[in-house]
Structures are given as structure tokens and as C-alpha cells.
Length: 442
Image 1 (cartoon, rainbow, N blue to C red):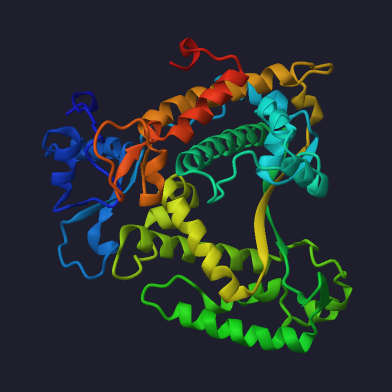
Image 2 (image 1 turned 60 degrees about the horizontal axis):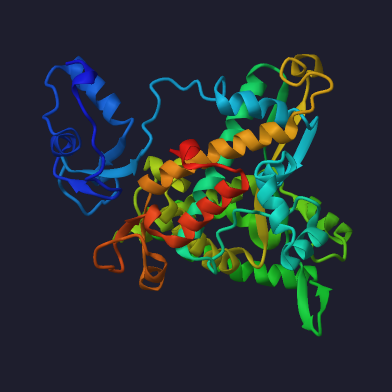
């Protein structure tokens, strides 16, 4: 049966929802029974997957005995494309390529790159009037401020708005970099950096460097905590893999032990992660996603490790509620397993063919501000739609931020982002900065 005969309605389903069978899920989303022919059924499943991702419940919850039951693991408000040619053409690609090629090379955090390319520069300039932001930039660097932070001190609506907008910026940048790399114009990738836990606070604002004996003693205590975590049923934490992350320095490695004395006396020193540490971080983050998924969906035990929304970092963090659960879990677990270390991922790229680059950024190009403004406006058009589509679960403390809902407010239920005053106000303010009227945002 042709796919055009089906209409997919995802307004009545949500992530974590369980159905007794695939047939029941398909009927709920389409209002019709699935086709019976093998080829037509495959087509129908592929098109359903553009809107809803699901797995057999047994693969997620080992307590379940039903072989037919399925659980929704992800919902795509904007259906996935039939074929992915994103980054090749369109508004984002046309304006982003010249902006990215403004820099012959870059290494740093993604939000720093956004600032340096001028994305939402009008908002950045406005924020620079704040003494707090000025101090941050003075300490860290000219562009080292995240406009889209999700600090718990912010109201829920603005937190979720920031998370969605920043994810869109990151996706646009990654698609642009992918496109330019495919054309042989630049090379890009991600790297991990770490701030080790090598100093003791001795009071009065003074610190001293830990000895190797002290580091080894702490390592044994952290190792016990790691082993305890790894013993959980279905736990993805690999003890041997994550040990090099303890204290941010692998003192069991003779090479690292010998170089320890070369670490400076700056407790804020940042180092590049070794390959072993990168693998350790990736395994730890995988485990935290597993924990966050269990916490969010209130599962009795950890879900099995091959669940795609856990193994696929992008899909996991596309869910604001899971992203929030991850952040909280990481803040509690990281210091208990590894000490007061910090680690993060940065993006790097380098133009390798300047002649090819001229096709997108000719010599004398002078439209950076105009192009950055166009991209910023396009993101705001995207966010206008997300306000109406995205749903956020509110706790009791968040209800005061909800002013656009006519019914009775209850904690523990989901509300559209457009109901949250802080999110709507943020959207309106950014639109005003870019002189956007209702005709531009729809």
C-alpha cells in the first residue's frame, strides 16, 4: 500500500509509552491497521520510524515477559528526511559556509565558535553590558561565554528554550563542517580536554599539589566506588576502561608518573586527554545516559545496553528531559568516581584547500555580519515552531512559570513550551533584537 495513504499523528503518544504490540502502536499513530504484505509492511515501518522510534519492551525491561510488547524510545516532531542531504544546500548552508571559512582554523568549545562567527552577535553584545559576563570574558577570553547555558537557577522554560536553540546551532555547524569536509575544503573533528584534580585546598585561598602517594591512596578509594557501580545489572560501566580517568591523570602508567612533576603549579591547568582517557570518558558518559534513562522512565533496573537512544548520543540529548536527567546524574556521580576533575569536548577544524574555499568565500568577502544575522533569524523561525511542538514536564516549583495554559496546573505533567512565560519572553526579545515581525516567524 503506498505510504501516502497513511497519515502519521504523534500528538497522542509520548516517549516511554508501552503498547501491547506493534499493531497497537501503528493503529494509535495512523488510525489504521498495518499492511499485511511483506514489502508494504517494510515500507510502512520505515515511514513510521521517521516519526517514532520503538523497541521490543523485553530489550529494555528484562522483567517483562511479553514478546510482542513495544516501547517508544524517541519521537521526532519534525519527521526525519527520507534521504539525508542536509548541509548541502538551503538557507543554513548558503550562509554558514562563508562564515565557517572566515577562520582558517579553530579549536575550542562549540559555543565559542558560535560567538566568534557572529551568530546571535546582537544578543552577545547586549549580554556584554552585564558585569558578570564582562568578568567571565575577562578571565576566560574574548568569546568564552555560553549564551545558552542551562543553569538550574534559570526558570524551566528558559532552560529548555536555551537547550533547544543551542542544539540547533550545534547541528547546523556540524552539518556545515561535514559538507565542507566532503568537498575536501577542510578537516574537522572533536577532541577531549581535562582539568585534573591534582591540588588540595589548604584554606585561605591557598592550594598545594598532591603527592603521588596521596593520589594513589585516593585512586584506590575511587576504584572501589567504580567497581561498586559496575556490579549493577546491565551496567555499561567498564572498570578497566575508566580507571585512567581517576584524578585526570593515569599514575599507574610509568610515562604519566614520570611526567607528573612536569605538571605546572596552576590548579586550573588544562591538558589534552590521552586516547585511553577519551575512551574512558565515552564509556562513563554512556553509563550516565543509561542511568538517566532509568531514572526518567522510572524503570526498576537499568535498561539493556543496546537501546539506541542510549548508545546514540545525539538522539539522547535531543530529549530535553533526558538531557536534564543526565546533567543531574553527572553532577552527583563524577566526583564520587573520579575526583573533582572536569572534562569536556571541543571542536576543531582546519582549512586544507584554500583555493576550493574561495568558491564559498571569495577574497574581499565582507558580508559576515549580514550572513550571521540571516542564520540567527532562521534559527529563531525554527524556535517559533519548537515553542508550539516541544513539551516539557514541570515540577511543582516550575508551575509559576506557566502562564499560557487555561486548565488546572499540576506538577508531573507535560506542557507545551509556549505555555512557559520565560521561554516566550526569550523568543520575543531575540526577535526584537533582529527586527522580526510576526510575518517573519509565522
